[in-house]
Image (cartoon, rainbow, N blue to C red; front, side):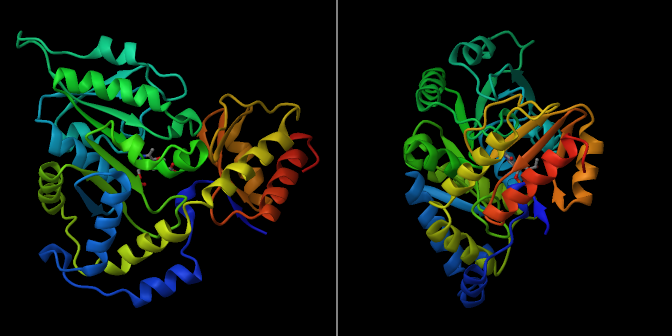
Length: 341
Ligand code: TLP
């Protein structure tokens, strides 16, 4: 048995999704003529309560387009110190958008209103790079899958609006927050100008993310998408996977959260293993002495896992992890931790 806990990005399309993709009506999306892409964009905009939405290649592209469409080179973007673009997007905000990122301390990847406010720069003095965008990440990947309290998102959104600053929510795993809290996606999205989510993580589609916002911002993002080479042609085959995911794979995200909890509870108290962060959604971070060697030993026992730091592993639960898979992973962990292999 092979259990892949490295990420929820590893999910493969189910037979039902593949069938929907095979049936997809397609056209040239650069000409705006792909009916499946158009339908996905309409559905996503409606779900998020936004005027428009754009189907893009990845979560990385969605975040980058949000920055390109809402800042100018030389501006500052406020992000949590743990934010995905600061760690895992290859420096694109500096290289491509030409913006300065201002990392703000967070609690499990969640910034407080006070810390955001204290880091805003709006001065007439030309020594300074003005803050024109604030980004939040919901759920927060390096925060253990932490959920932004809706009150904090609302407060940051209100502050930004008062100060004339745009806001973006990297909602790569927004629907994990939605199913866990019962707060509708549109309610989270209402407080930020743009919001993205990934179809290719726990939702199980093979490719793609959505960026949503007001019509003018989405139009700008569409131009930047083209500029970056992200204008796809018969992308409806991919969009059909996304539509299928929104129809069939949102509610089931709860199962991933339950499996994450079961996994963690079973390892609670095992000598040498601790949990540095809470696990409210589909991730469990584990602290132990030599994460790289432990991950290698797990691999030999059919469990794939990411080492995110020398002493830290991350296990992510998703569509392709069954109850038996969780049992297998628990056994492998316990056996190794107790030195029985
Ligand atoms: N995260 C991936 C890796 O890049 C680390 C993962 O395995 O978790 N925002 C957030 C919060 C993300 O977690 C990710 C992907 C992205 C954006 C980027 O999405 P993609 O991989 O589609 O570019």
